[in-house]
Amino acid sequence: MAVLRIELDDGLYRQVRAALALRDDTFRQLCMRLGVHATNGRKALIGAWTGPGASVVRRKILKAVGLRDVQSPEQAKRGRRNGEAA
Image (cartoon, rainbow, N blue to C red; front, side, top):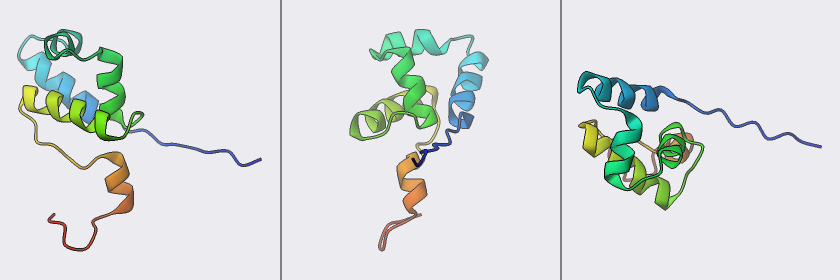
């Protein structure tokens, strides 16, 4: 039986929390203001939750803290497609 191993990266989540700490704010409070469950927000940022819904949540969080959006974990694994800008 094959075992699927998924590597998650919490770097973006840590950057968001650091940006919030500079404002004396918390991740949970931000998610409450955005109407996002904190667990879903964390999963979207670390790549444990992917797809269109996760992309929307990730963009909301990053916009709220003033960070630039990055590729989703799925996009990063696939690499850039022909014609896509860097």
